[in-house]
Length: 441
Image (spheres, rainbow, N blue to C red):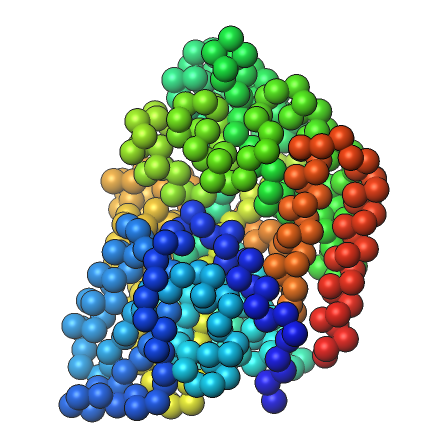
């Protein structure tokens, strides 16, 4: 039986963090699953997505090609604001007026899989003809959940985008730096930012947003909570990291008070020499005439252990996936959705998707040469296997936890508030959210 979480709508906050993939889109929301058979016996299937820019045009082309490639199914791709997807998903699916499948993040998809809004897709992975063995292992690992006591796959890769450090090549060269100077540790990254800072030119070494630091707390400290759900935020290691970052801002190596959008604008205007962001920065910097390149986000000395046993990664990721909703009870419709998943993630379409959207491919058979028109996107793809979704493993409450962590890190960068007191208060709040959702089992 479906469990309805009291805070289902907070996923809208999670989706709001995906602003870099386009939040301006809007579209029809009449995604009813009734009357699936259309003209000439074609099965109609409703998809929701939030892509409104170049990525949206590329997705539309793939959908149109799929519809033209066969006569059994018709995918109705409906553009929705990301916030609408987050705010209405549970109620729309419960009433049968939602999408048949949707793209959203793994950070809130886990909760919707547990509460029954989404149905898992292990049977898709069990069929070798669907080509899932060609999917990148680290991407599929993010959506393998334990549902009703059974570990299973609950989603299919859509757009997985690791962050990297983008840098202004002219500023880099002017500072006497070369590729040999790419930092290998987080401390070296901060030192590099110092070298790139030029107060006389009002130039900052790095445009570092003071939100979205979940990966940094894992890579340089103990994270927010461990893989078993035990709070680890209020730790000496996290305090030391935040103190270091406060000193970094105070010294003027990054402008304080920036969210992700402001940080990107600072880099794209030539005010800052580096920025940590996803692969869409390639096109944005090109459009603004900023000569640029990238290198991996350096690892830190954090003790947080990821589910695969790795430590120290500061590389976060926007992890978007395809999810089948629980309103799909028609075998023909489910078969059509699965056929589209197979089509979308095949080799040729992943080349098209990557070149058109700037997201790295989900299919490991795509070669660097095939992405030669977007060589920096091929470089981004090299970081997929060490990138992780910042706040994951939750049954619910992602939005509340994300907002609490952002408040903590913003206070670190923008105020002189006592860091230990903020850590203690934030840890207590997050424990409350975890307890609330645990009590709803």
